[in-house]
Length: 198
Ligand SMILES: [Fe+2]
Image (cartoon, rainbow, N blue to C red):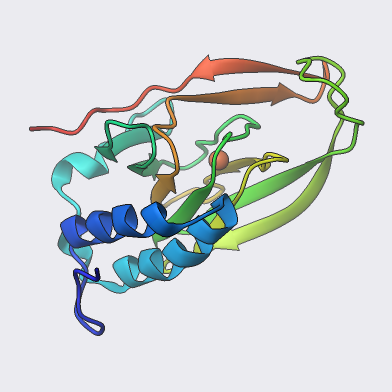
């Protein structure tokens, strides 16, 4: 059941409700990102006041993740991420499908391709080569699906301006694998976030 009318601005509440409705009928991660990408695109085009001041919190030493919504069954989460100049993720994967939409600034993505045989789940012997680069301007939406995992790093190359982006995942996204090109290994880390204010 659609909870919004085409042509009208989405609210966060209607966006999240429609996401929950859609993932109920999606059979695969690719189905999810295909169904939800236009919805994220519409949300970005809505009036920019759908976010609250708490969603714009930043940190001087690292990119800041502000949880907007995390469901109780580990199937959907939405974060705002604030990237100050020079702030980047490590090289990482996701283990789930995801959508990234940009509200403010230009988010840079550097992709990596895994080229070893992947014959086991070992965390060693992982060969990555550099892949493509994407520049995501305000209003842009990109997406990815797992298996094989999408491996990349994202961040802010701009020396002046902050970046505000929205990240929607098919899990709670409380952690991910980080990759080292030097040691050809990966390591699971928990990823912190600011919890929603009540
Ligand atoms: Fe990522």
